[in-house]
Length: 229
Image (cartoon, rainbow, N blue to C red; front, side, top):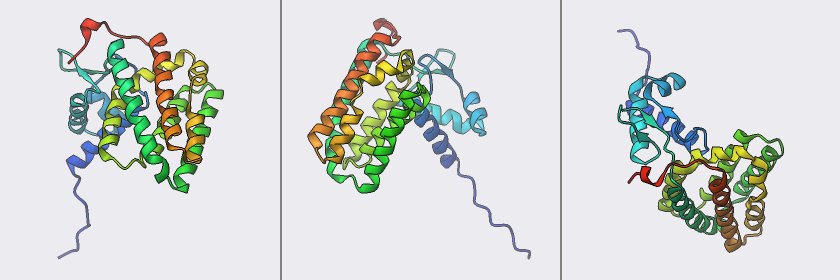
């Protein structure tokens, strides 16, 4: 009997998870516009997969309130009300400040270097007026910190909140320079390197709240009557 070629079966769950993780990452960094339509066909074409894992991934994101479903069954990026955004961002300020404070003394030298590089990239993107790079480095910087938080539950809740507010970050395109002018990221990084946990946590919270103030001026929102849940 001839020796067969050793092949690993393609696991549907693994494919679904990969599609889900890619969509999740793009949503969290503001890669989609609020109100933008999204379909299983569009996702499968972009990622080179069948529609089945794409639809399954979209269903998971719907359950996490990262998407809404229209009456015809299509999906869209939600457009929040002002009140909804305020709720999400205030929760972010509380949870991410706490996560930063917890992580401060746990971050090793490699982690501090990653944080330094991400912050340098954030500053560079701002000076070049590069919104996509700015959003990318903003996410990298924050999660390079939260990765060292000792609470898995806290990190999971932070990620869910980012899923729900990420698309609104696209409105920083109105004036990225002014958005960055209210950033407290440099202050947070200095505090982390100095192992000043409380100061680092406060800086991250202040950064989120200043971002909220900017978005409330420049963002586009749905009416309160359109609020879901």
